[in-house]
Image (tube, rainbow, N blue to C red; front, side):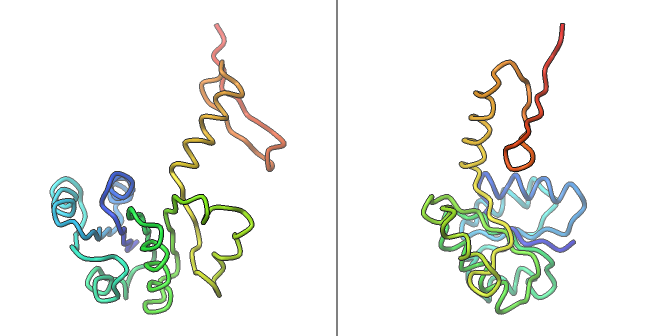
Length: 162
């Protein structure tokens, strides 16, 4: 699968490492040429130095043939515009954006991410995921793993029995 990852920081690099390890055709875009060099030197990825939200940069990254774009830069707004450009200019089918600001993550604004508004298919928030995982661990401190199902109605616990 042809995938473009925008942002070569910690989150983008980890996503690129995982997806390139699964034999996907991955291109990493970042405005920091040093981060691009680090990614291309250590991972099986292509790299483009430039601003992720610029159509010409996405075009050089192969957006015309891409099946997925993951916008994981340090800026929520750049990630949102990148997904909009990917949708409007290149017709990329799957768009994932990392959003950090609680203002964008508030449930009352969830309609913002519809195809006819801001075409983002999946919103990821590593900070929110860490907080959720911490709260799950606190709810069952003896468990080595917890998983919530059925909209919070059921919880699976991993427990070691001696």
